[in-house]
Length: 435
Image 1: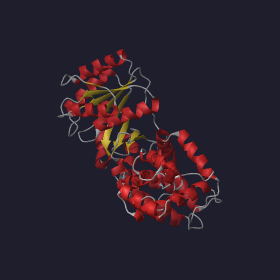
Image 2: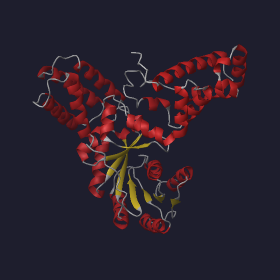
Image 3: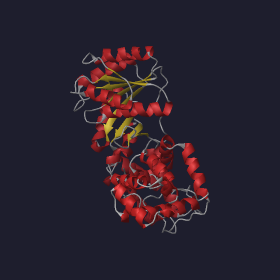
Image 4: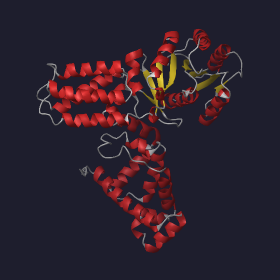
């Protein structure tokens, strides 16, 4: 997401660092480029105009310290304004009810039914409590079956009453949740191809009967600026508590995320970052601003790691690195854990300075990882523990057993040795970046 905008802003910031001081002339030149970058990212023109005006006023204002470098001043001002544009502070879900009731609404094709599964999964992982999915989309063919399939995949129960009245179904579901001690009730409502009175009346009826703590609009970020009209339309009728932007991982522009809060005053609460059932992240304006400016998102990276990586195993591997005893068995175990975090190219993009290090455009074929696993698994335990004993005949046997070439075996062993050396340097605090 935001790849095009990131690249352009990084170029502008680099240029700012070349100036001896900030003047009206050079700030105007930089802001012209920022304006073009934002418009090309599909940010609403009214939002762009106000953003540029605010940055210019602050950059030329008396609050700018002359002791700071111009590039640092510019980055700080742009970062602060981006945070403000994105909503300022993170807006957490209201889950105070017993059970907490979350009602998801949206147009057809927005990814609402998939998102409700992702949100239930997110809440279960984060709070270790019981969610219940409720099927109230009785109009779209197979919508109930789709929700049941998602529930089965996640091992989260689905309450449904077939094609019964959605308002009655939602009421019955709340009573069922109370009787069976569920903590969250997530209601999947019907969508339409466009906003219409019948849809809104039904949603309002559900709202009036169940009194949800949250009414979340699920919207496809690929809609671009049309999304603003949809959000406004739903908000006028339902008083939305938040928005979930889906498919943001597939939209390199992402301008709608920069326009939503400013134009609708509805906070973004979650964003879809992958198609997988763990591909939903809470929306934090500060972290998002840093990502847009190419500073990475180390908090998200750590959170992902904490969910997946076994702390005891990681500590054990760290100690072995310090002693120089890190082996291919450890390498294989860590690779399996990292695989669970999702596509490696997405993880690399979260690293601060990823673009400068050329990590943002890396495409990693999942088959390559499978090939590496096959090679390591074709080794004996002795070979994994002591790769130095792997000579020509052993390499041929490993290559044959894994279905790969001897050249690939050699390449893996070389990469492992390089990784081992680097890991030891990092663990001992002696690592220096090669640039």
